[in-house]
Length: 338
Ligand SMILES: Nc1ncnc2c1ncn2[C@@H]1O[C@H](COP(=O)(O)OP(=O)(O)OP(=O)(O)O)[C@@H](O)[C@H]1O
Image (cartoon, rainbow, N blue to C red; front, side, top):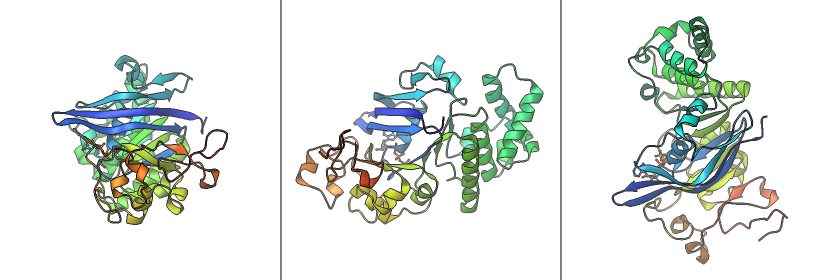
């Protein structure tokens, strides 16, 4: 049912093991994603967004390693699985049917020497072995039509399609087995601005119709403001604030969220440094003690240099929101300020 938990991520830690030491790319990240929800991930380049989603989808490759935490996934049929420890044999049936991913570049995602129809067939047949050839063709045509592509295009090779069409075909493929969760990493960066808007409108229409949940990574904060139900702001491998877009925009609680909003990112370009905030993100091989943002924070308190603020629920007047900042009191389940 829409609104029930789909994914409970708890203290997820991802490290890159390098010769020069371990990079702590995700540092005890916790959040819950509900069924049918669109969660946006925002933050400067290097804040850990890609590391987080490759860990979530188990597409992580060395030197990245998940070194702690859990990703509890609630399957459609009521099972609870930890995606961190699930072996490949049990993970495989979940791919596409529960969990699909749309990456930045469809060119890289599709096999260049296979026609689209063969690539759709691979996915569909793997998860529905008894299906006939005619049914596969019919389903492929329906999926392509759903994203505004003529079914005859199934006979094309990926390079025969325009960039926008390829990206839409990739979205259609991701939806082929009606997944519960679609993870999208900058799904429209490779196409022009007009096409980006069209593709986004299409993703939203499909999401409303089919009800899948989305984790959406982009540098385009204005886009997230329009499409997301909630936005998680990441800084130096941690979620520093999470809440509804309107709240984050009108009443940002974390000084970093405020900086991000005020600097308003360049459209569709990686955000490497914020105009409104002096300094740069820390080296994640050796992050500063206490709050990692404190060296750049105009509102820092002396204790911010030592105390690591945990992500906590704030007073109800700020809405359903969590922030990791010592400037904001937490409430315990009884509603007491601490
Ligand atoms: N292969 C790698 N080896 C070592 N460190 C890495 C590797 N890939 C990423 N990192 C480091 O991990 C940290 C998080 O990077 P990540 O790519 O997850 O951030 P991001 O927010 O997705 O950035 P972007 O928006 O640029 O994609 C950064 O400090 C980055 O330098």
